[in-house]
Length: 143
Image (cartoon, rainbow, N blue to C red; front, side, top):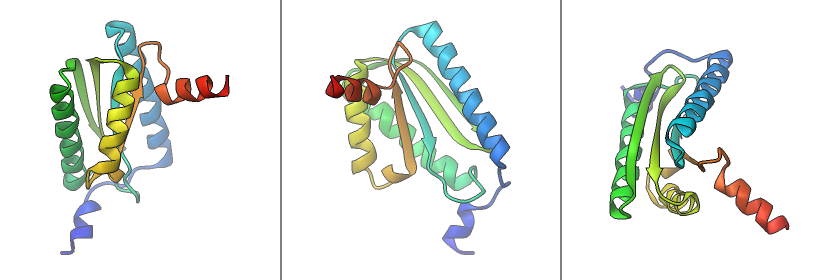
């Protein structure tokens, strides 16, 4: 068996399931923001092909989570809540963190770019008002 075969051992996901997963993730993010009023780190994977959840993809997500948590610990950012979801649409993880959203965005972007698996990670930051720090940065530059 080839290594690439391991990536695609699992059930294919439909477009409708992917759209439903996105809506569910947004609802979980809103609920966490309302509850904790802290910036969120939201992790999904960039998984090409129809199979988004396999043992290999879950392992890739586990590596990302470990790296994110290690970085938070190094920066002394407190993780007050986290949730992991494993559906056919792929592994997801999110956490509410006591840290400035812009600092989270900068460090998570660096992590995505510098880690060997980083191109497979989509780490989004949502500030306590529900906005993306990159959106805020673009709005500031336009002014």
